[in-house]
Image (cartoon, rainbow, N blue to C red; front, side, top):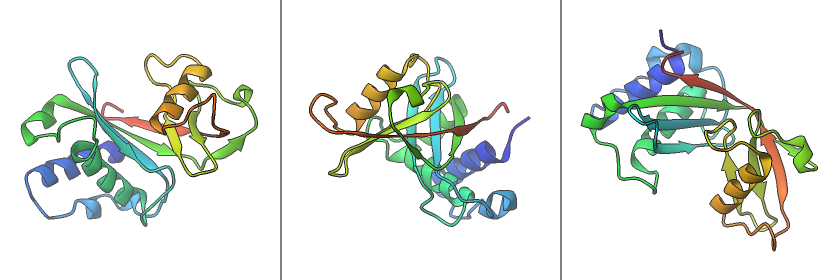
Length: 175
């Protein structure tokens, strides 16, 4: 059994990597009337290592469907940590889609939970880093915040930071 979120992401990547320009969005009308930030993650099926992950904190398009389409392509081709995904790799990749709630400010680390909430670390000058919740190896809030800060080029000892949290609904291809 699968779900519309990951089916759209996979179909988008199949078409994009085959250079098929027909958009799959019309096949998913249930995703066209919602708006939210979305992250698309690609993992190797054999060892679950990350192969690409790109997302948006807040919606940047008119629908969740378009966010998934845009971020799936970006996760496969524009994640600077990895070479672009090739079509032949696609069958060996597992796709997950995280739909984010709107971020809310928090006053302290006590308001965070690395398993339940994602975190955004921001500075006054506009730098920010984000880490999704419930990631393997990220067991506590201090570690979660430090990774998010590092991703944003933020020095937790020097910079004044602002924290936000959000929740996700995570969809896996096996759901």
